[in-house]
Length: 313
Figure: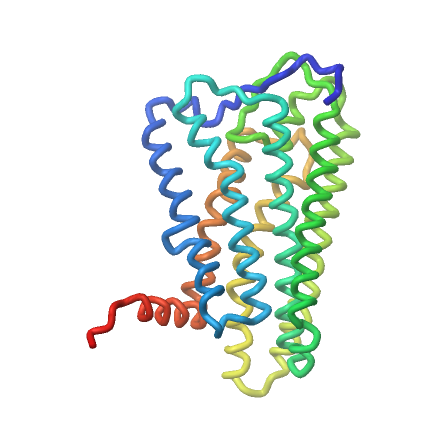
């Protein structure tokens, strides 16, 4: 880290302004975390896709990656949030803060890329179905998933290194529930205008480039679907994309609002709620969206439950 800084640790305020609700908040966030991972959550999606052969397709390969990613994503923030709610000492070391920011950006940027490749998968399946088995063969899917994780790591290294080599002032209070970019940037000394421009530019590239690929994919998908003569075929094609579209809207809607704007427009309380939404609530909603709106997943769940039930004969 830069030797110019006089700060060796930060104080994360979290929800400390609501002391009378700390036990209630602890129980709520703990239940949300366990729900995200276990009950009708991402771990269940991973297990179903792994054990049910009917889900051995590229779409579910990417969904399994997404579910694992969501478990990692929530594990970066919620455990520390739970500790912060009950602990009297709300400090976090400079190194630990940088580590948390790195992994949060790593999983967030990886999800941006993964959602784009999931859109590409739907584009090939609907617009070029005859070539789908060749184009989206297993080796290609593995390479695309690996590319997502690699891009996420590079983005996280660049952003985290850039921010934590800046000099911090004496103030070390982060008005947030984890080490997010904007609250940490507010603690940097001097004029941070050009730092903001660089961060916003990088964030715009990381977020908007995959988002543009998603928009382009769905433009071709919708065009192809509208040309279908059978209403049943149209409905089936739309049903395979609806879950992904909802997830993309939830994730990108909040991410664009959070990251692609200057520090002067940053509202601590509003953005804390928005961060809570995309870092905690969205990972909970994703498996629900994919399971409730997907006949294949519901069918796999039913078959798995029947296998686990003891036979009457």
